[in-house]
Length: 106
Length: 390
Ligand SMILES: Cc1cc2nc3c(=O)[nH]c(=O)nc-3n(C[C@H](O)[C@H](O)[C@H](O)COP(=O)(O)OP(=O)(O)OC[C@H]3O[C@@H](n4cnc5c(N)ncnc54)[C@H](O)[C@@H]3O)c2cc1C
Ligand SMILES: NC(=O)c1ccc[n+]([C@@H]2O[C@H](COP(=O)([O-])OP(=O)(O)OC[C@H]3O[C@@H](n4cnc5c(N)ncnc54)[C@H](O)[C@@H]3O)[C@@H](O)[C@H]2O)c1
Ligand code: FES
Image 1 (cartoon, rainbow over the protein chains, first blue to last red):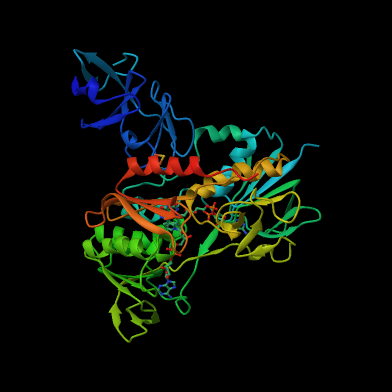
Image 2: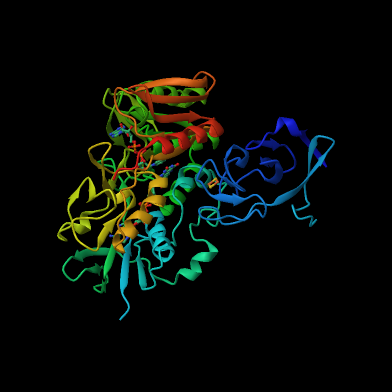
């Protein structure tokens, strides 16, 4: 597991980027934490810099939207989903588990 | 009999129009006519990752798996040569025609060429995939590149060529590059990227002639300077592809003239993307926007117009981005001469900043360099602040 930050450092509506083999973006949506691949599947943009709208993030470059729960893309230009990653909150710290999807599939 | 809509131009605006038609429940026949051999592809990477060799053909394809379900009839490698507005049929270069109940004009624009450059090897423009492939091949064997024009194409090609290890000189007639879209101050800041990365920028000077027989050897400037060149890229603007409509009765200016919802003067004919000059209430004139997001978003409204749906005229906040020398430049809004540019974050010297353009103390546009997160917030704010015209 990769430590991300204390829960207090990532308030609702905020996102942060974690360096891993492939960088990961972690979001706080009204107290729920979600993690997806940070790099947009379309071109080169960081989704942690995107616009959070409910459980979706809009890419800052060409506005493709990804569902934080499933990684699915809602419309062009991106064609492929992003991977989701499991988030664990323990003792006030946020961790991500790369390689394990949000619903626990390794 | 079911109805037919013809979409002329098989690129971003044309494909977006076809998708929007299905999205808006049109279930008739859609014929997409395009003169290129390739299925729709994305142009922005042609001066960036595709030219650098880091994006493949597959990466830049515009088609998505879901597009199979659209049931489009493709007529690629086919040029539209005329439009009969009475029968609303599109005449094709093979002598046939497509009779349609509605027509979407999406023929885009083409690169302007330098007079006298015809037939000279090593001289390129960059608009199509074939252009990009030819340029990429030529750059691979070259040492010295001269770029004519320091607009978007010029800056992006220069940046990519530097990355590929070429010696690059950019020649621009205006005293400050990109002063039109960004204003003189910010144009100068962005142009500073050239110097940062070892590209020579010569401004306020034109090209007198290209020197060479068979293949270009040098570019001669109006002040007599001779710049040796293995390859020359000409990026001096684009011309809308509208000549084929000359006898169609469709009103033309700097592009196909439309109202704010994409309608031309001919019922059942709308125009979108780089070929269209849409009425802008804010600017009080027709404006032809030559950027990607416009070609992606404009078709939804134009298609609604074609299908007979009314509604308020959209008040888009135009947006474009440009990648140069690893710097990401993003701009949104409508800037005019006289607007005051204020740095609200970062600094120009650090090549990381956010600038807000103000008119009567209200923000009207925003420019970011390497500030995607903050830029997105400001862009949203601008969109929220624009009142919808009724
Ligand atoms: C190299 C390059 C880099 C760019 N980078 C950026 C960027 O970073 N950011 C940005 O915002 N914008 C960028 N743009 C601009 C953006 O690509 C255009 O705004 C966009 O492609 C416009 O789409 P369109 O469908 O309206 O026109 P086009 O893409 O020009 O497509 C029109 C199509 O119609 C075809 N056609 C023309 N005439 C006929 C005819 N008579 N019959 C049949 N077919 C016809 C053409 O061959 C073409 O395939 C770039 C453009 C280029 C060339
Ligand atoms: N990032 C982007 O948004 C992007 C990137 C590439 C292309 N495009 C689009 O592609 C089209 C073509 O781009 P472009 O860069 O060619 O056009 P442009 O209009 O952006 O720039 C043309 C530049 O060439 C200069 N110029 C004109 N004639 C000249 C001459 N004879 N000698 C030297 N300089 C001369 C102009 O002053 C201007 O600075 C435009 O529609 C543009 O918007 C957009
Ligand atoms: S890079 Fe994300 S939509 Fe293009």
